[in-house]
Length: 304
Image (cartoon, rainbow, N blue to C red; front, side, top):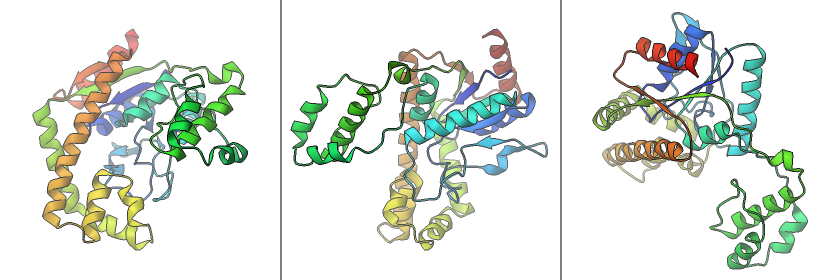
């Protein structure tokens, strides 16, 4: 039983508790697919809920949580690399990998098995492109075969990096550029809009009461630049702007609540898009008990 099970869903839909219960019953281990839970001491703002990983007195092993210091710019290539390492480790030990998260880009990248070789800096190439305009760089980029993981080119810096990647890929043997899709059972939590909105509002106020503002203050007091926290978006953007005096508390809470609702809507749009892109998603009713959800997943697992 080493074929992974992947659990996705919008924020505040109960993904973590479901993954933990499933991992407990199958002696599995969880791989996080959340782009912000990788950072240490960013707990309340990311909804890390580490306490949830203990079930019936047993700590469920988890991976790709608390692996970087705040302020670090972790990227998709690094996630794909670290995910592959964790997945192979779990499978080698005969355990069930349970992938759990709501970062659609991360989930889709690892499930599609996109080829993402690490591309070193090419200083000579960069120097030769340094004086070119964005239009000129874009024209150069169009001369390369289009790849799924080229960078968007809204600036010269991004365009040069995209050319650097494309030029490097030209030198690689074809097998190194072949996608290797992951065979997994993919399930998603089907939660109605009103329940989702109520959960988000309730959870936001709970985390504010638990000390989310103090968490951001502590990070800033460590010497992390405000812009580095704002870069992470959502809670860290709004809380940091409040702490440094750019907004009032009420403005922060109101703006953040709206932003989280919008984020959840974008998550659902991404998941529906995955279905259009060929993913088979098994939707499980949010209103089922956790035990019934697990039973449903295991039924699906046996038949796939």
